[in-house]
Picture 1 (cartoon, rainbow, N blue to C red):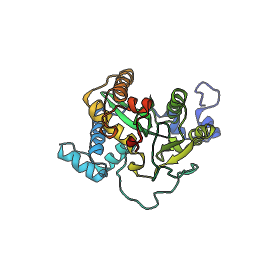
Picture 2 (cartoon, rainbow, N blue to C red; picture 1 turned 90 degrees about the horizontal axis):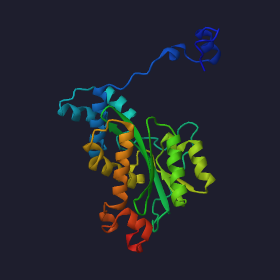
Picture 3 (cartoon, one colour; picture 1 turned 120 degrees about the vertical axis):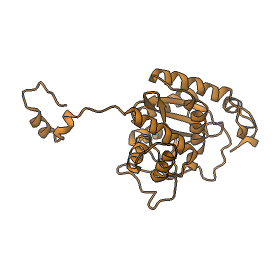
Picture 4 (cartoon, rainbow, N blue to C red; picture 1 turned 135 degrees about the vertical axis):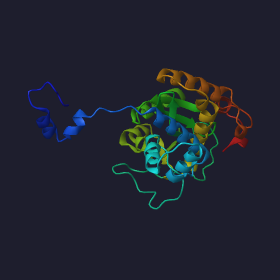
Length: 275
């Protein structure tokens, strides 16, 4: 919106547009190598100790010889979208302007594919940077139906993953997410309403309401992501695709009677496998 070549000075342009003049001159700085390393370690510790808050994470990092303050830990936790899991007051309060839908899966028997899907976003570290990964998962089979990557936490790549899942596999009866702003936004919930899909949202800080996606994040990170140092976004995209193909078609699940997600999703086994 600001045109440095315009005859009006930048100070007057910012005044007309009612934006901060300093924001025009601000140049975003890349995340330092030290912070990238800390973010990776915090993410690893969070998978092992999801109840750990910024103070406990600070102490765990110090045990590993990494000196960092709790405020900096809090900043990095926010950047990679993680929070400690514990009971808080007023946790059901909706974000301003975003409607929070009730959780529809409590006590519901999941007996067939496409009955319920879930989606979530996670942080994926690289050798020099990081990306965000969103996945759409079928609850009954644990199959990853679609996934997308982005360098920013916007809503568009979540919509792309949803559209791809629907175009390839039809639509679910229920779509469950957490209360992240991407999923509570009008554009995302509006897309679900267009398809006539019931919208379900887990309680704030209740990881168990989206447990199958959380288990997938732990699997992909421990079994693949943390074993590699990706050099580029394209490499991450290629390697993540390889793992998800393996996860769907080859990796057996004890909860699925040693079957793979593909076998369960496409072959519809007996109801003994119902979740």
